[in-house]
Length: 213
Ligand SMILES: N[C@@H](CCC(=O)N[C@@H](CS)C(=O)NCC(=O)O)C(=O)O
Image (cartoon, rainbow, N blue to C red; front, side, top):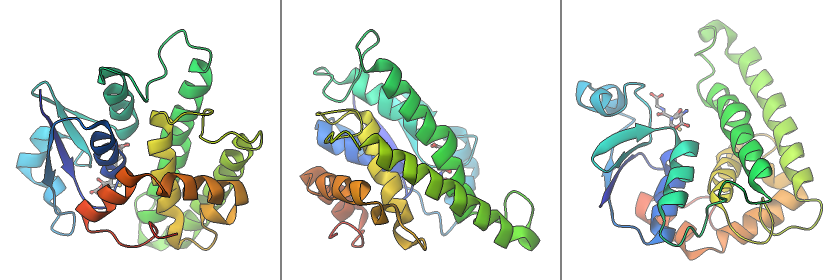
């Protein structure tokens, strides 16, 4: 059955859009205009009551949360190319790293990009300072995870984790100290940027920065 992806260019939907392309899965992509706050429209709130992107319709039912949907797409792939199934040796690392990105890194980015949310416009500067410190600490950990020379976040093959990790590295591109200032993350980002599907999703979403290195 065809998936339906609700997306906005460059946002958290990018990882799903990218994986759908890489998998060659049948899907329809519906653009939601964040500039016009369409993600808060009554019609979209029926799809994702949180008013966030992405949303992914699976078997006719809408779902949200990018990390969860990446894991779902990976396990639904008939060849399970990017899945790390229960019982496999890397499973605990996979879950830990996936949840670290979703629970720690994504909220810090949310605070960086939406700094008024936690405490209003008055506290934008301290919120961004906190977000920056948390993100830089996270980049240090992600970089250290690659210190044994592994090619991808979990080892020698691409998993669902890499779609999320590479997207988050991309999000840091305009920060004072982007993730690519960490040498192993830079080399990793370059490897991911060589994937034709990452180039393709940039083209489809009309994104031109970062992908060129
Ligand atoms: N926890 C959600 C967060 C999604 C999220 O924050 N999406 C942002 C774009 S990156 C969004 O929808 N922003 C518009 C808004 O919050 O109104 C996920 O992981 O999917």
